[in-house]
Length: 337
Image (cartoon, rainbow, N blue to C red; front, side):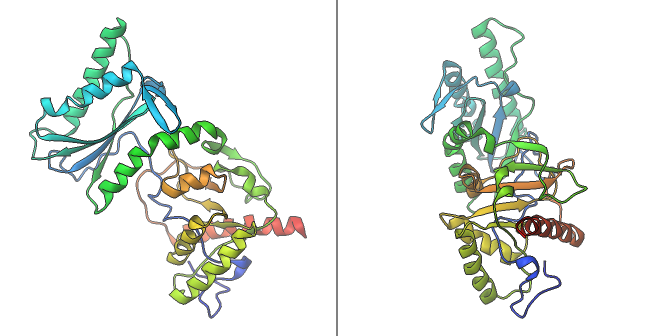
């Protein structure tokens, strides 16, 4: 990501550029209700995380309070039917389950190769739930679920623990989103003088970070050494602690390393520019979710059709993102001149 203005420290210094906070943007925040892995045989033994949402996200299953979900009678029924899956499909063992008001996550393990894909018992479970609630309410037209389901194959080392933590943390995140709704929605066609002209931008998070008195565009060359990155990391952390908003796509290894320092610090605000638009149901993951709750994060993206799946960034993409970051940072300097 280096360019003109690189000093002997290996860091691009144009626009006071330095290092920053977020994982690779492509693939970092993705959500789709139908995430099929087309080169995977879903009959094979694996752990799978399954997510199912209710029709129109109606809160059928309970309420979230004090970072916990209290199940309704309907939620308890769904839980009981989920635990029946191994009885009907002995090749499946159940792991973590979290039922939320309008969706549920469950990790299942296929213990031996099945005759049919794991989606078959998931669809059977959904059908059983719908039938049971139709009987309960005497409504043959009742629609409980959204079509399909989301699946993630748990095959990377450490993924099972990560998904388990994610599932169990759902009630806390849900309560935070309910308490801070303005920080957890995408604003289409965001208007602000600091945004590059001639382009339509969407935003997610604390839009008021664009009004902060000082912003710093961050750009670290891929050729920067470990020592150079460490020096810049300390400098950027100090800048962030003084209220400077760090602006970057956070793509290069040096930028991501400096990102970690800001994420770990008790103070420091971030404007992340990401390519690809915002897919439906978008939300930041992991520590970026907590950063959003704290009002410390704004994610900006050009208004384009959301790109699903991971696509490599081109050099032109990187240059365009860096130019936009520089414009956002320089605009404040012009305003203060």
